[in-house]
Length: 421
Ligand SMILES: [Fe+2]
Ligand SMILES: [Fe+2]
Image (cartoon, rainbow, N blue to C red):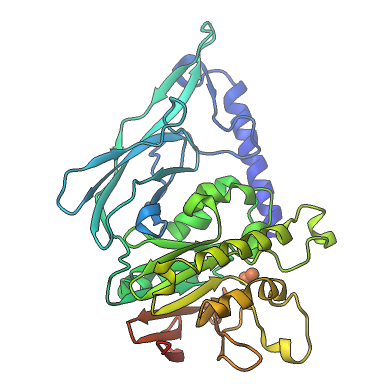
């Protein structure tokens, strides 16, 4: 039903675009040529370009990205300053052209020092083209520069004594849940936020992705701390799912990466879909077996690095759990990711990973390590406010403390893991 409404809305907007393009008048007595003229989607062409607060992601200081959601086609640039230093400008030009996008601008920052306050601001400028009848060439109609407000975030510090982090999962575009999670997270002021997949109910339109991934409900979800993005199986579904790297800013636009925050070494991996590649559901579009193997090879290389080996705690964050309670009785291997477990668990065990933090089941669960399950696993809840959870973790050199709570603050699970001897 929701999908049908989206198509109806899109087609209605497209008819409006056609009317504006073909009708008399238009900008400067010409015919407006929309950036999305050939698309089934449409975007506004008046008012400000700003589509919400920027998102700080990476999250490691050497991979910082600023994503700026847009509400109309625009170009722009970023300025940043470490501490009290002067602002430096960062452009995103490619091949002699500054960026020009309809939904998001993406700026990769140079490697930043660790554990520092970084001030930043984004300046936008809306851009349209007008094709005047007698002209062969078009005319650019640019809006006034829109200087953004100055904000500050702090880069992660591998040498810090503590690391505080918050985990969301399976928000599935639920407004009430997102607002409550954002409010609680703002109060906790973590070092980073990890969004553990299924941000969406599938990805149908690029024009909706800034609202789905960057400024849901218009909230400034990660303009003050870095976001660690994790891809869920619903974020793999729909015709616009291949546009996801434009809206996420992970290192090298991969959905498996690692970073260090104080005593914590974090692995982020992509569990892919919850059905086999040859499922008729995918109509031949799935190729997750190869992706799992690439991650297995990457994992083996990552765990040998000193920054990882020397960390007091190691956590794997992934959307689909590697174990599930039904695993022990009525087994359906695709309710959890047995295929990823088979591909990765021996290496994770060898690496001394203590904990897996997942989502996907929409049922919060704590599964301590056992002889059948060598890694402990914490699974967050679901999208509805009565199911949703916030996980808050604090790592020090000698303990990892985790609290999983409901949206009203009710404590569901408290876990303390000592550092391995
Ligand atoms: Fe989900
Ligand atoms: Fe899921």
